[in-house]
Length: 405
Ligand SMILES: [Zn+2]
Image (cartoon, rainbow, N blue to C red; front, side):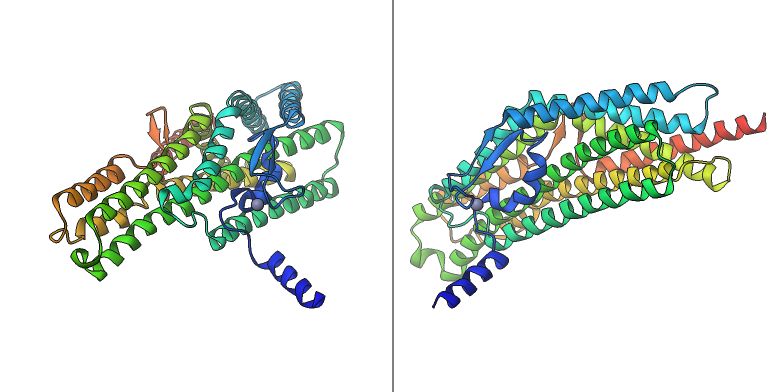
C-alpha cells in the first residue's frame, strides 16, 4: 500500500504542476527574479510551510539589488581607467559596455522605485485566480499550461547558469586573466545576470498572460459554440447568455488592466533604454562584423565571446517583441468567430451584449506601449532593422574614408 502511495507521489512530483498556482508555474524563474524584479520572497500553498500564495517584500533582496548596482558602477569606473591613448576599436567595446552598465543601473533603479507596481501586478493576478468562480470560470491556468511555463523557465534558467559557468571557466583557460580582466569578468557576470533576470521576468509574464488570456478567449468561444449547437431559443434563457458574457468580459478587463501594470513597471526607462541599446548594439555589431571580416582589427577571444553574447540580447529582444505582439493580437481569432456568430436567433439585448464584447476586445487590446512613443511588437523590430541598416552603411562609409587617408 505504501509502495503504491509513494509511486503516486513520485508520479505527481514529476508529472504535474498544480493548476491555478502561478507561483508554482513561475517557480524556476522566481528564484532569480526575486533579486531585482520582485525584490520579495514568494509563498504558495504548495511550498513548505504552506501559506496562501503571496509575495513578501524582502530587505535582503533589496540590499542585493543595490549591491549589484554598486558593482556595475564600479565596473564603469574600471572601464574608464582602461581607456587611454589613441582611439581604437577596443574602445568602442568598452564604451558599449559602459553604456550597458549605466543602463542596467538605471533599470535596477527603476525596478527599485517601482517595485510596488510589480507586486501589485502579481497579487492582482493571484486575486483574479482566487475569484475565478465569480467570473464563472472553473480553472484559469490549467495544469498543462502551468507545466509548460514551468518547463520553459526551468530550462532557460538552467541553460543560462550552465552557460555562464562554462564560459567563465573557459575564459580562465584561454585568456591570461590578470586582476583587471578578472574584475571586468566579475562585473560582466553581474551585468549579464541582471539582464538575464529581466529577460526571464519578461518571458515569464508574457507566457503567463498568454495562457490566461487564451483560456479566457476559449471560455467565451466554447460557451457561444455550445449555445449555438444546442439551439438558443430552446434551452437558454436570455439572461443567462447576457450574464455569462458580462462575467467573461469583466474577467478580460481585469486581466488586461493587470497586464497593463507591466507597462507601468517597465516604462519608459526600460523600453526606451532597451530599444536604444539594441539599435546601438546591432549597429556596432554590423560595423565590427565587417571590419573583423576585412581583418582590420584584432580582439581578445573574450571580446568576441562578448559580442556573440550581445547578439543573444538582440535575439531575445526580438523574441519578446514577437510574444508581446502575439498577445496583443491573439483575440483576433475570437473576434472573427464573434463577427460570424449567427445573431438572428438572439434578442436585441443579447445582440447588444455580443456587440459590446466585440467593441471591448477590439478597442481595449492588451498591448504594451512605451509612453505612447511606440508599441512593443514586431513593428518595432522593423523600424529598428531600418535604423540599424542605415547607420551601419553610414559607419562603413566613414570607415572607408578613414582608411583611405
Ligand atoms: Zn503552488
